[in-house]
Image (cartoon, rainbow, N blue to C red; front, side, top):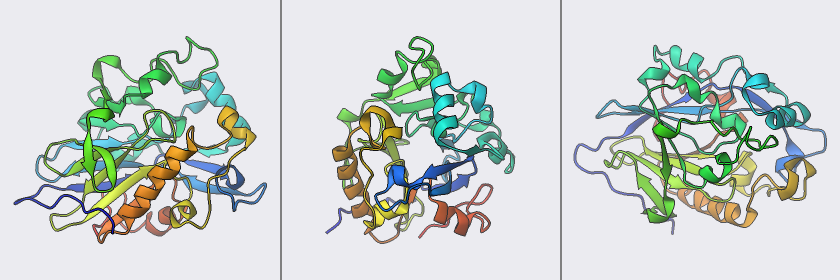
Length: 299
């Protein structure tokens, strides 16, 4: 049986979760899924999410999508990677999307970055008051980032060190099927979940979306295509475009184990699982109130 999730307390706070437009990528299918055909590409969103605590009204972002000035704002190695592999479009970024509901970056308490790949980090410099939360192992990528290492895909100064919290996941306890999670506000409304396998420091978010048992699991890049969650496809290995790993994940075994736990939580009633690049979900929900200033309905 799937593991249970924490029960609600009296007057249980929860989160209103709003999707945010933050750019698009043309993903080469064969790079990511074994069922992908050569030369076929899928246009996918790079989603970000706004989470609002219904009790305190505090607001955090999960990921920042793609930055509009990517040709100059990312390290040269990343720009080359985008030009050679992906077609990217950013009709509006996270800041534009927040403005649609009269929010500015200065209103945001914290930014949780699932990881520091370019299509999730946006432009952190816009968020001058926010605390940045990243998996602790992220520091190993930024320590020798660009320009210290001119070939690095990650900028050394990506996030402000004096407003960054490195999350020490080894001290966390379990939630549901996941062995390590952190109750962010301490009220059972929002958990940051250790999500190993994709990239050093990769984390997911589990948010309570109602006081009577609704939840959403934001899986980031734990899977790039929905068919990986359903078991209709497996992760491609040996693809040259992924560099030395030959895979979308730096540790496929850990990524597969984590994916199995996501499948487990997805079997629970009233739990919605959403990945950052879900083209099908985007198509079905872009115009039905799930995007800020609306919010994703609770199950």
